[in-house]
Length: 216
Ligand code: MD6
Ligand code: FE
Image (tube, rainbow, N blue to C red; front, side, top):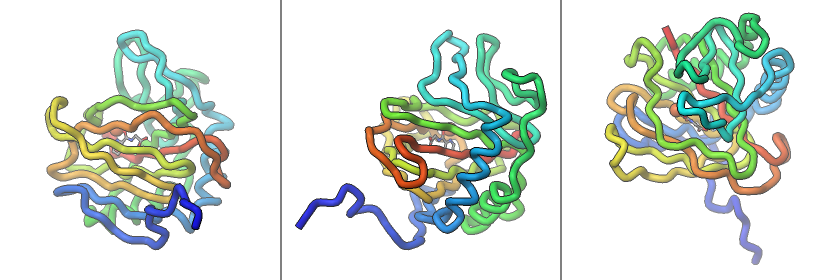
């Protein structure tokens, strides 16, 4: 018998509660993988993936782009949402229908009705890239959930508490998995560990993460 790296990951759609308000919908995006990937290509042709600067002057290891009415940016002036892409000076590309539908249906499946995202952040992780523990708190209404879609290589997601010093639980997010979180979990610290080297048939040597938010 050969040990398979992906042996312990679900292959059928299923739902796992992480904690109050937070759920992993395993494989929820799988059957739309080609349409979602094509939409990522479409967005990033006009709003290129780029490594933004943190307010503290560090270059982020993850490459980011956005679509929708608002995009999330970080630079020396801080973290914020804005309607223009600082790289091009133009509005962010519109949110592709396949994105909007996926986000709304996932939110619905998790019990959050009528989710209407106005911002989608596209993250591309290459081997070694990570995201430290943070809270998502630049949005104006914390009653609105966040929908997070993973494509490509698996990556360990860390889900912590409402204070930075609470020990996080680790959850491997695989291709097609969707995390929806809100309610009492909305402001929990979270991040992802360094991406391990690998190759995925759809994305090659990287992982994409899409996070959908209602920013205003
Ligand atoms: C990632 N995700 O999975 C980073 N934020 O690559 C996030 O920062 C995130 O997955 C809020 C809600 C869900 C998330
Ligand atoms: Fe986040």
